[in-house]
Image 1 (tube, helix red, strand yellow):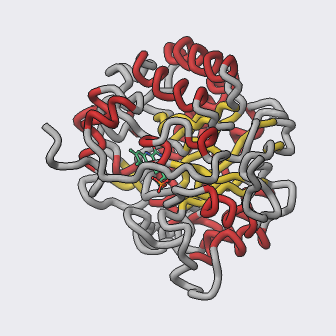
Image 2 (cartoon, rainbow, N blue to C red):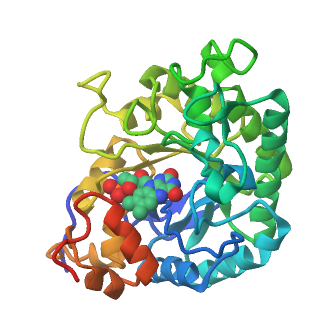
Length: 366
Ligand SMILES: Cc1cc2nc3c(=O)[nH]c(=O)nc-3n(C[C@H](O)[C@H](O)[C@H](O)COP(=O)(O)O)c2cc1C
């Protein structure tokens, strides 16, 4: 028998959400775009195989990549779609396969806003305030997109997923509206935080009204200005999370990128502590960013996170949740070769896509 490090909660203990959703452990496969879907947004076998392999590797909850709720929100080629009923059959295959493998299933839904790619969407991108080739959203655009999110949620439920995550992070549509710098509107959708958060809140409420009460609905947020999430303030993000809890969301997922660091705004405070203190106890808190070891994951749980999402470490280490039971085991870290990624269950397209991530793929690989 081996003993595990002392921690108030083990990462391998079950996760139970207030909706009744139960996952075998507190390890979540982070939402990760993998460019493998068919051109019409339907699920491809490669994407199914990738997500199933992580369910088989013991990830208690598996999240899909960002799936677009409207054609004009598509960010890149090979992106999963959830904007039309023709997507339901593939999504159902995926939800069924994940359930058979014992994983809880969450589909991430999003709209790219000004980061939608007109080459693939066929439309002029729109956002809060015209910028970078994007036009200013009309109130019609906003009414339509709220309904698109609700309809996508209905499809996720119909397909048999356990829940969904609204992608409110990383500089896509909702971040563009939340942004104090990018959103220059002076109508009901811009200006004070109440207005900048309105689109995300209306979407959250419309989704909550559309799906059954025990269908898990959460949101991913970028707590601070980082990377593509510009004009985002920590205190504002905490307030937005509180409002979304009022609106009936079941979990908040903070995307931290470097979860071992405290916040930029308050260098002696950690985002997980702050969000946990701000949220009602029955609203779960997920955290992600730079977790490679069990100790790093459990440090986030000790702060009050309920679950920890793994991105890059899950790409390389297909059975991370099973392997960490062995205290001697050491996760493989980048850079890795394309051959290693293929051996980890990535299709050629996904493995090649990982070259876009700095220092991830070893250059000496042919
Ligand atoms: C290949 C790749 C694709 C990603 N795609 C998404 C995505 O579709 N939606 C999202 O919210 N985050 C996405 N992310 C961010 C991850 O979910 C995660 O938050 C980030 O990689 C930090 O965690 P990590 O250090 O464990 O990788 C992606 C990350 C990677 C590496």
